[in-house]
Length: 268
Image (tube, rainbow, N blue to C red):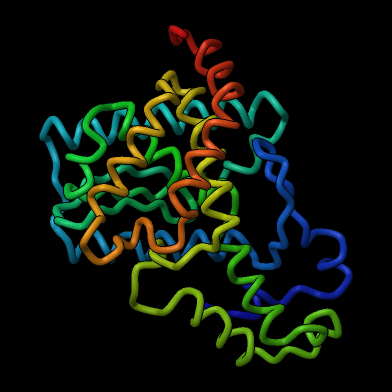
């Protein structure tokens, strides 16, 4: 892959297109990288991850993962269509897979490549709990958090040289490989607290649009916190907001989420 194609953006393009606004949360973020190249690499990494793991198929749990994921995907597509931004998802190629692993984890690569680990299912308990997890992870992809992390690394390492157009191909490659280490799971890059909080909010709205009860979010996160007590912090929680902040934010977002839920046919 030619990194110049991925990140070689001129100063004019940077100033015009670098700031991206999330159509669901309204948050703006700096996204400098070429999304098409990120999607290509994500698809390759996802395929490699599945080939090295044990994909569960045909079971009730595997079907639940596919069903919940499909409903969230459809809700996202309907929403983006309703605001005239269907093009944002035009190159997505959605997949929802259940992987055998004791880890309390789930993730979504850019482009809609989702994996849920069997270890988290006892914590999700039901479809509503699973929708909290999958809505959160899908939101990372839809919000372009991978692109944002690449951009943050670029600015932190090279600063004004980016706008001056003096970054070499090897320097771009170095930034990209630090954020997306070759041969590792792309989905497991660490997001920042702001991105995790945004995924909480956006995921709450998406699950509600899909007809899942957003009031399940607080019990789920409480169960996740309890499951990690006395153990090494799960990857899923490693950079998330502290529990008190998360619950407080969810309570603030619940009224709007319940409006989406009611519009989707949910009972309040």
